Length: 481
Image (cartoon, rainbow, N blue to C red):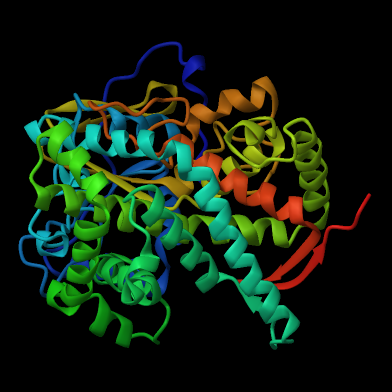
């Protein structure tokens, strides 16, 4: 368990700051030891849990992968944060610089993004940040008219494929991973890039796999994979950065696709935000491929799995969905899912337990005191990298009752909604608003609504369903009432 602290409101006086516990060990050996613990002997969650318990602190020093031997110029030393109070420093642009630290001290080459430093790698004080964030927000605003119908059309194709596989009697059920990714890829291309993959056969057939490889090559050095045994994973996947040349033909194919068929979206960047064609296209591809496709591909399977293994929850969700749809002419959309508090709470709880991006980073702009619960303070020096581990911060026992349990209705009602300020998956509190001057996810609200629409569409069509792993084992079609 995490060390527990009294809530900040109970503090009588603010104690003086103290040194941050923990350490980095000897050069080379210390980072290597932490890397092996992180990827091999403990795994990411246990890595942070053990150190929090060892130092009796939710703020401590550690090394974060990737490290030795071939990550030149990467400093693995971080100040780790695993509580809700201290975590908020990562959202304060006056305290932290977000320049080139999306996935930590290691920064993939901009050759993965066509030579463009896309918006997520820019700090709020860089001149181009406001331009690229405004472009992203503009694309999302323009897509709002078609977002729901395009998504539901994609879900229709996904479920048709799954029903076909179930009817064929495939052993182990019908996997939903590839049909879900096809749905996500096609609807995002149409909604965000204004480009229909059906116009290019190669893109339609292989686009999602290109994005999977593109994402993987950038992220693998920082991720525990588990696909091959140790020590091979350490030797082959975590010892060196992968070159973008391995995926360049695929990326170029997607670039030409957006350039040709997504001209309307590209023009928004060029005419309305003063970007070059190249930078507009590369930012569209990153928004589509990394932020949206990558995030949904991680998040939505967890949502389906959680509902698929809990029959009591499914019954409650079904009743709420159908009651809400009766009041909205049977239509699944942004308006109807706002009237589904349990569905929304279930989505928030999945995001709390399994955030799509588990780590958030920021580099201290200046010396400051990092405050945890009860006003406990830690001295942070300018230039130090802060590393927040969300899966533990959002299970902070000082804030959440039964923090390690999935509680579907946790965020229902006034008291439940008050807890949303501690849900940080979007690089900011759920109660916050994305602006051109902050780093909060521009699509924060639409991500939640889209997940709710998936749940609603499942229960509009089916009386019940069951999952085993990442496969549907049964889909019971809705019977006339």
